[in-house]
Length: 230
Image 1 (cartoon, rainbow, N blue to C red):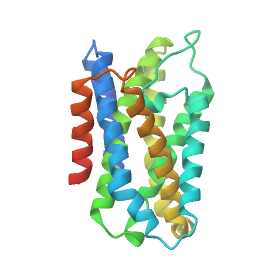
Image 2: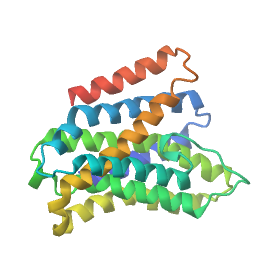
Image 3: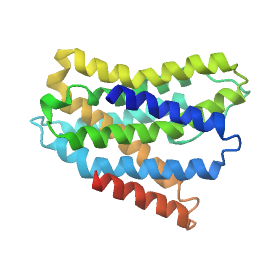
Image 4: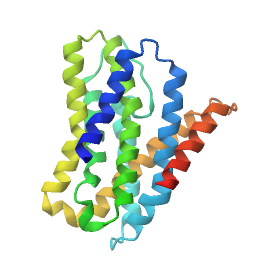
């Protein structure tokens, strides 16, 4: 089920791009605001309390590592993770695609072997939902970049399929590599650090020079409430 949800989230983004010809930037920003608020809220409500209940004495260090790692990844991905979709010379650098693939792979890893460490359905559900909601706008932006670069449908399909498989591969790694199980809390802390960077960046950028936007406020409130309820 976990693998299906991860792949389906990318498929939803592809379908939205294909069947809604005039996908408004404002709608994408609202979706980003909703997913950013949800990511931040699940970190506060679920993920941070869980990782700090572990036996590791260096959780804060791993959180910071994840935060800094995302800064490095965004240097190459150009901020696709939080909705940026601009190309120079209509070309997509290979480093951008590799960075996005690494990001997707890492965020899927904590979903592997959760039962052995946490044993709570709400943990898997909240984390999985957060990743899935985040992948939809990222997929939309990525598909728009493929179109800007003039990629054929076949090439776009191959690349988006690779992207769709990266998070499930991360989860599969967490399930199969038993040696990683003893570092599950540390791996989760790194991903939480990544989520904190992405979510806060989205929320800060959603302010639009500190101008009040009622619809974005509603989207942020809904994302936060959903995370609290789950």
